[in-house]
Image (tube, rainbow over the protein chains, first blue to last red):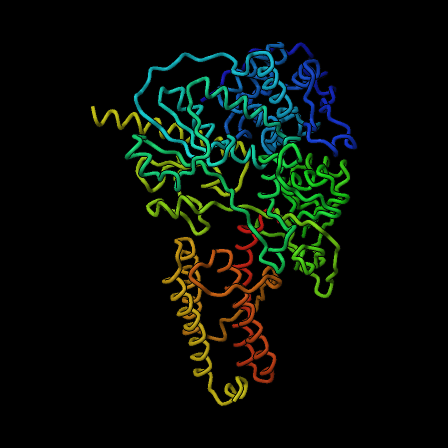
Length: 485
Length: 154
């Protein structure tokens, strides 16, 4: 289908647009922010947002939309920013993305929409993520957070249970409530948002944003139930047979931490990134003693891994008062899966990077506390399937590093609870739920999407999977009514 | 009598049969572990290992030395420094992969040692070299899988 080009409101001549520099994101001073948990990025000003939007060259065949997993109408919302219709721009985004303030902050735009932006072929790409964040924040502050209310749909009389309140679950809830279904989101923890709330620190994604997004959905009629573990509090079968849910969506995420299986991982002071970040983010350990969650203030904290989770953990350790906080990564910086922005921010905040180093043992004292890490130096070999050069241990290069805190951030797996309590739901050898492209599982009326299916991925990919499942659930419910009529 | 002395008294068919027996022992071990494993993902992983060893066993039974192409794979050494898990009913997929990769590594070392020891006997040395390469290839594949699944950010 050929898309109609949006009306242009850009008053800058085409040639001049390419001379406008990409607007930089105002942010807290690195020295100050490394001692607090307030948001690092402060957001574009309205003036900056308009200037940035004017950099768009209005391509005949815009590629940016193809780079977005949920195909946000990027050219359209950018033109509305040029027109200074910021609420209109937010509404346009929300046609495809129910969490723009979240995605504007945590999406890796540099490998998605911005990577394929044609301006980026010769210059820096249009800062689509920063613009998305700007209009979402503007809408929250000036449009009562929910922008234009859609018509209240006719109740369908059908009930959908959503297990997990992370990005996939929230996307499903947002789409299905518009169809008139009765939607209930079940969350195992005491706060909604899944990995967005327990995994991402306040300084990258303030909790108030998530609470606002949840409040918006509540205002539209979505019910939220916390402290409810599906598989323990109630099984899927019980939800369907006793509570009358017609369909269930499983969006449990990948919350099971991976460990390295090296000696000393059970010592005191060795955390999984999940535990460390949950204690700080969800249990508000960073507000000790106001919030009574113990978190060790380290002299030297090392964080093992090179992804965004490792960057979140090391920057959290620094803010918690670690005298020295280091990333220990067995490849080089070039191979790091973390976003460049996160690496840049970590460096600015004084984080040390020990690349081409891999721990092989953690050493404890007689009290069982970690006091040192035995490490090996690595060298890079041939590229692997992902294109990253492989680290090869350098034999005889062992050395001891004095540390008093370790955080393991090498990856996450799926929680086995659902597969253990529902053997009829097919899982693969990694424990991920097997689902088709629309999220259908091997159990009738049960759908799944996000990290529990794909393994650890991005927020927007989880939302994209959630939206596909929502469409499939809606079709399923319609066909159910049709067949019983 | 040690293994090298035993091999000295065998002909090529006997040696191949000995290696086939070695593969069968691995198949039996993984089959037992699969039957006792408590979770489905572990059963699936053990089945994959059974299939891998079975293929190797069949290839050995049809072995012809002139078809051997020397192409030793890189030893990634990903699991070399990890703790060796104990075979048991509650093993996770991660532990199964570590165990299997370490087994392949040890067997590769044994065959490499035999290949070096019998370097004066071209046929025997080439045969053991092929076996060593094959075991190392399995280790390489298992460690690649391990890295992709268990250390995506490591």
